[in-house]
Image (cartoon, rainbow, N blue to C red; front, side):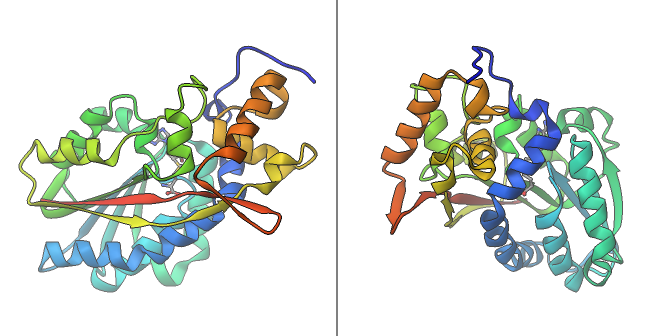
Length: 285
Ligand SMILES: C[S@@+](CC[C@H](N)C(=O)[O-])C[C@H]1O[C@@H](n2cnc3c(N)ncnc32)[C@H](O)[C@@H]1O
């Protein structure tokens, strides 16, 4: 088996990253989509009377599966929506645009403004427009200066607007794995939701609230070294390209042992599932 001491971060290969997310996290997407009516309602309740044009901003929107569902629910209340999409990955943007074309009934009347760039780049070119809803799902972990992005988001929010952040919950395997000092540099940066809330509460927000979306992810395939699905899962779990082949075999064995022994793993028959819970943080201006 080839091995290297320089594992390559999964984000440096956007196509592989996209595939790893799609094959691994389908269940999470469905759970978040099922939660979209709740998110739309929270925004509507806070905003009160509808604006002539409802401005929506999504940061790190990925392939758009969640955003399209959410915009569908918002469209019921706001006939005119302008959606600003900030996503650096070309393949994610392409998939998002395709999905929009396939869903004329729910988002056919939404006007999209695409920005293929990071949020840090977007903040430098932002023209001062205010948004009624700012959505950040699964992106906080990737940001270099998280506090600046959160605070700047607040200043981009219209009066009575809502920010919704979906973040890894402490009770999720991904969160705990990154926390484990045993594997420095592997996994994604875990940010406690309490830190996100603390940033917002340091500025004059009207109200913050948190809810949890519970999820389980089957990880049995990671223990089958011939499983392509298992390899993609390991890539996402460690956030490393082709982890099974590129990392030292001792490290691969250690990660697999850690995965099988974690308290966040449950066994059902011969299948193993890990906790993949998310916090939903609502911030109202
Ligand atoms: C885990 S995915 C979440 C995708 C989608 N929001 C969802 O909930 O399914 C994280 C996304 O954030 C994007 N991303 C990473 N770094 C970013 C940055 N600095 N600014 C904006 N987006 C970023 C990635 O390309 C990826 O599409």
